[in-house]
Amino acid sequence: MSLLQVENLTKRFEGLVAVNDVTFNVDRGEILAIIGPNGAGKSSLFNLVSGILRPTSGRVFLEGQDITGLKPHRIAQMGITRTFQTTTLFNQLRVADNLAIGYRMRTASGFWSTIFHTRRWKEDREKTMARVLEVLDFIGMTDKAFDFVSTLSQEEQKRLAIGVALAGEPKAILLDEPTGGLIQEDTDGITQLIKKIKAAGITVCLIEHKMNMVMDLADRIVVLNYGNKLAEGTPGEISTNPAVIEAYLGREYVA
Image 1 (spheres, rainbow, N blue to C red):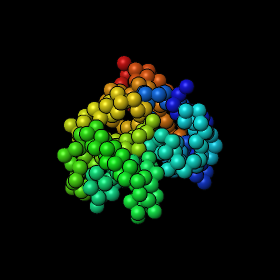
Image 2 (cartoon, rainbow, N blue to C red):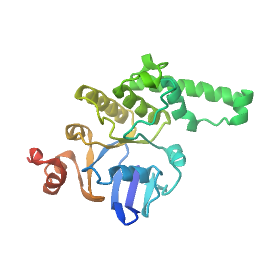
Image 3 (cartoon, rainbow, N blue to C red):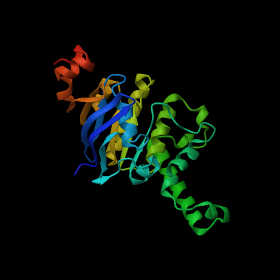
């Protein structure tokens, strides 16, 4: 069974169809790339899967369980976390603080536990600290743990945003243009981090415009155009698909 199933997903905004009857599966442990021109509906699709938007029609399933229309925090608790094109970090907090917030949904202590420092609060604090240290090491930012986000480079902020999504112990992570605005050297670093995420057994679904990166990373690719699914296949199949070449890739990808 696929980890994530998207069935006939549609989203309309006052006559504009952002996503139109899109169906695809994301298999456990793979990297699936979503590509397409600007305005193709890629981010809207992520917003539907992660609960930010409610679909006009269609369903989303995680491990066979219908998650359509659930609140974003509930979907995150069930195992799907995400990043955004523009990083949504707390700039006036430290790197470790942001990661702790990413893990918060896995803790159980509430207001009174925190006020009175109960055993549950202490246990949650220890688990949070352990998870933060684990993620810092994984994303290669241990030496930045106590730096304020506002002092980080753009690449470090992108890396931290991925770390925040990983802190919640997801089954699948949705990465929306994780290398947007980065130079090639920094893009290579994020690419290696994504490969590391896959090697750790976490399923990855990413939106990306850098085609060399996509062809290197993806196990499969879904192509959107004007909200419709234009094609689906392996990088080799997509790079030689005449409809995809005409709509998006360009003639340099003709075999």
